[in-house]
Amino acid sequence: MRPLPSSYGITSGDVEAFQNTKALFHCKNQRFFGSGFWSKINLKSLAEVVFIFGGVPAYFIATFGGSMGMALAGFCAIPLGVFVLCAIVAKIHQKRIVLPANCEKNLLATEKYLEAVAEFDAKQYQINQQEKRLLEEQQRKHESFWFSLSGIQFEHFLKDLLEKSNYSHVKTTPYSGDGGIDLFAVDPEGKKVVFQCKAHSRPVSPDDVRAFFGSFKALGNKADYGVLVALSGATGSGVRFLKLNGLKLWTVKDVVAMANAC
Image 1 (cartoon, rainbow, N blue to C red):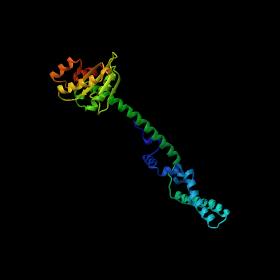
Image 2: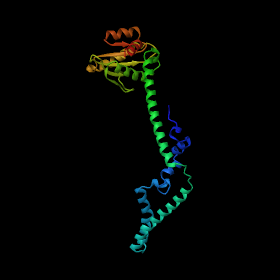
Image 3: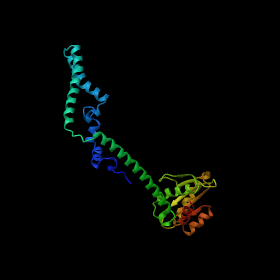
Image 4: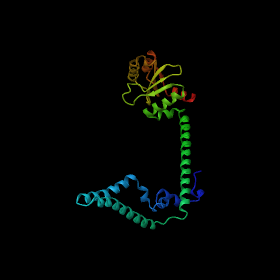
């Protein structure tokens, strides 16, 4: 069950105030003039204040006839005056802030609550992802799942299926300019194999089959054999051409059988 604010002794209003960085933000910074303004002060900004409000006036004092002592006094006194003025403004601003009761206690409790919520959400995400993977594994055992995929999705899920079927070094090629080859792999017997994927709802034509054969031959000794993975199979002449040239044909039934064997 997702953690509740009441379990940490706080209310949803405390959580909202913390997340909006309003009252609790000032509570967290009240030790230093009670204003979030001071949390933004750093060496860089302080140096800028000294240069602008001290260095520039000091330069003009020294340039237009003032003594070096006057210039040094201006360099120190003017930034100090600006600093004190900002402190006064911050103090006035702090008085306008109504800090909630038990501010520090609520702040710590709210931080613990949000940490617990983040941890719970992370675990829940992992559970959801695991359930999603299990559901996908069950769906892969049905022909309808494979026919529902786009061409790119088909390549992705086939790659995953090959890896689970003890194929190694499984790599996809770029989605464009792949030279007619979609996947490279090494089968369980150590032979180099290339795949072309066709997620078509109709049998592939003889022209597609011959094109795949041409791509396979162009690889030379980079592949021992090729597999045309066509969910709907190939036409009669295409099947004969594949057998004649030592290429294999996998249909959706072969893919589902492999998924059931995993």
